[in-house]
Image (cartoon, rainbow, N blue to C red):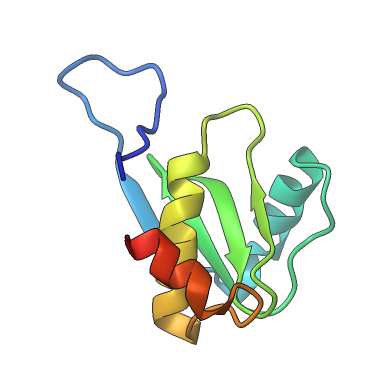
Length: 106
């Protein structure tokens, strides 16, 4: 499987910094803003954030695995990282089933 590039306006020598971390309780407004930008309801429960150069650009709920992301950026790679990390933290999403995980690994 080929890697999905995360694209922004960067010089060739400057690569973006990606960080994944759990949202703090005082970041609820940031998650609501991202959900509003994505025209989605806010995430509930424990939320894992994907930051690109310090800015929250995508998030996933560890409870129901719903994802929100900045619709104005290419966030496919960030979302893939979020889903993978969510599986590590909370276990595989039972809605996807074992066969989906096996297909992805092939």
